[in-house]
Length: 269
Image 1 (cartoon, rainbow, N blue to C red):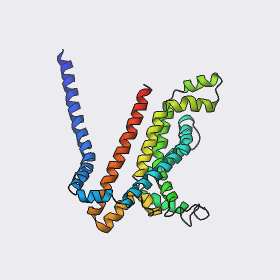
Image 2: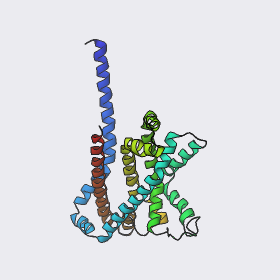
Image 3: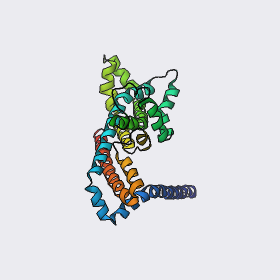
Image 4: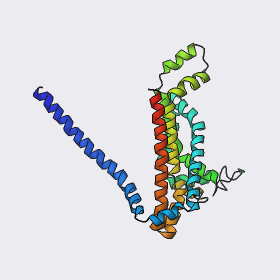
């Protein structure tokens, strides 16, 4: 081994050490607040057991999950065509539409809630004549979750469509397959993992939303709103057990879905 090669290897090893150190700091920054919250609550098992037995807590968690699921399904139905359009075509104003899609990620979510009130509120553009009630109702929770979470699905789906080789679709078209058949039998299966990952991220973002929801629909209370309400009215001792339950619930669901996605991915490799 030459001295130059050995020197390069040492530089690479030192670089990896720096990367590992910085990465560990980032992981600790994410884990410490969550782990500390859970461990601190374990010293108050009575409070945790009381929260577990509280029907209002589970009602709020199931309502949160259900509303997030609805918003994710809507994002899939309407976001998939948009993602395909952005991935496969160039047209005037495309950059503006891509910017609009990303806008909910950028603006403060309390601002998003106020903006949604302008459309879905009792005197809003849609809410003023819609037979569906949005303010302090499930539809309001769903539209708020959809507004902030849809970009995660659309952008991930768009990346998936862009990763598909156009030649595969073109060959199928030359063999007589319709565009719809190509889309559902070639494009969708090849982008399935991207679509599923996008849906998972959209659901996760929806279930964690608070700012936009609390503006348009404080009631019925989703889990983040319940935690906030109990923190204001009874302090940390009353809100932390609910927060721990929500953390563990979301972690279990997220890991379960991740395992399903990973297993499905391995089936195609």
